[in-house]
Image (tube, rainbow, N blue to C red; front, side):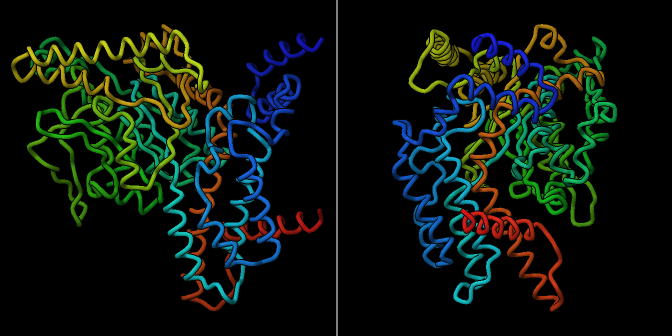
Length: 504
């Protein structure tokens, strides 16, 4: 009976209409399959449960007693994203929803302590001291970023990933995109929270980016597709703004990767720090310029009067996926990112992606490793014999593609079909976009609880710093009552937490 029930509920899981329904069925399956008992048992060789239990009890007692300085000391001393190995993927491979209850309680208590320090009134711990603590400890802890890969029309899958994360309040502020991912990332990075839901309506999107050109144009322009059609598509979906203007308006940190079209140049991550005045539209146009499909692009920039000028007039840029599909190192240096959520749709990558099972290697792993190593060695040998700028440049591009890392700490990817692959460079209909969004949502649902847990503390750091700065600014300009803001949510959460503990 149990096996039949499990099989039946697994089918129901695949047909769930929304995340709430999916989570309910997944939680029931965790109970039926024994994962719930595993979650309740705090002991495991996969993490240091004694350390986590000790830390949990210490933080909880200090928060209850109101010893803020000792609490700050403990947090600054031990708050780490992988303390005791709590971020190990194996801890999220046993259950469909969540992980060890001890890990979940520790993460939630750490975030609650941050909220408590943020909104509490302490005579011996000033607002300036709070800001300093949150800046320093938050920098040490790090933050998460969402990286969107290339994949032409297949990249519409990213819309569903973002929709699921946005609706459940776990969408990172740092978002980077390459090629097709740059289109989606820029649609998000130039919109406020209030404006964002509009991009999830397939009927309101016009993503007609592809139009073939004549044979004469192909021979003269070295491209199969009309760049004017792609530019028009971007103008319809992305605001005419620079990176710094988009950041100041939305507070989202948008990044777009581009690759050099010539030798002696490096791949670039364009954002409000590295290229503040470059226009988002031109950067996305360049990031989508797949060699042979679209011609290389010169970037545009806006001067202080809003007039458009060429950016590095002599240089041209192409598809960001070639050299830097997922710019992890650059994001780490620029934005203190140390946790990466990847939505991956590249057709040469997705077939090799699967759920990680630490300590367990399959024949697919071996084949992939051998094939990749052999391809790299072959390219090195070929490069030593190839002469001429153009052939050598092609070999270098292929080598760049093979050398990259294509997965993150958490990776979301679709189940691609032959039909989708054949239509990679075709214009998607509203019905096709709706299917892509649905596929993206469904692929994200099994990862949502892991994303929530692994980003919970870094999101608290961001929320608390935002509230402290906003609260201090309002106190400086008015002596009137405080306006309700996200800080009210934090304060209510902290108070509610104290009431719950006292009641227990």
